[in-house]
Length: 215
Length: 215
Image (tube, rainbow over all chains, first blue to last red; front, side, top):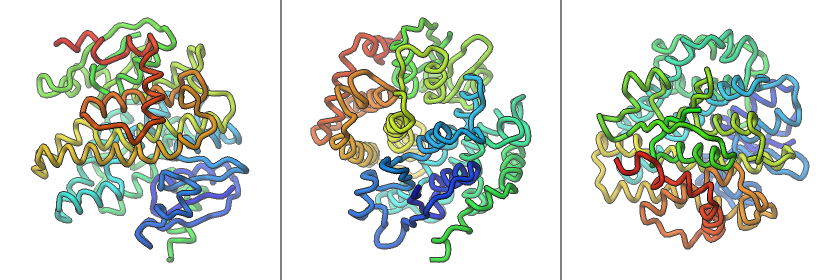
């Protein structure tokens, strides 16, 4: 398998975590979002993924896109260890936490959105930080409210082994920390992310440990 | 089952389509996003869904949130007709199209994002329209490029029966039409959406046909 990835991209980070948890070997192909006007927009990369976004995963003849679709695929093809529970209701719970991060927080704080705000609305760096933080606070605020009451929470979002939900949560927490956003108001999220980040597989997947981190 | 829904919400519309395709009866509970400062933020609704967003689906003791998690749940509990193909690679393709809409386009053009832009950055109605249209054009542009080359496309995104991908695509097309965004540059998307919207189940799910459309 070949993973097209940018070390700091949350969506790439999610797929790296899933690959590491399942101990699947892969070739790392760096796509730098800030070099050459965005390598993800180059004709070469567009031939792999017409959407011009990372990640993309090549598995034999298949090119897969969209991190959550890739991870569901990996989980169906390589079931161990499972990243989803067994009952439909529990699976819905895990997926809903993953989607809360992937649909409510991440897209609005994405690099290309921040670039648009600066270029077209001329917002200041201060306004950009407020925007970034606002959507983290709205999203993590809701999620913390849910998780702190949720009987299925253990060391991780569902019980004591990592699932798709933790796979999405960790990169968002990493991002928040990168932007110095305090997480004191989100103790459950913080505790779960700390537990996950302590796993060897998660360390392998960390942005700082990717080949393009030193570029 | 009881569906908490707002007639114009894309995410609610997706779940209504899935319920209609599977011919599942449900009770409609309107949550008006613009009345009373946003009924989704009321303490009553927050007891159902702490996130304060629609939709939410009650099925017996379970309260499910996040439209894609709800639809995957419905598909696992009530498998006929299936909303996902059988092979992992085809499922990944269908999910990736659904996620392109649900993660790349919809969240950035969401009501609460538009409200933030107006309130905090003081953007004009003209700038708001440009923003809205920009993300539709970026998203539909990529998606059209993909779909027009894709051998799996038939009357619908995957073959000749609707899947999760069409379930997500239709509400986004409906939204674009509502904002008078021309779809001439996206003939494949337009053709698929027209095919889907012609189905009886899809008509039932349309915003104009919901109890709260006349409120």
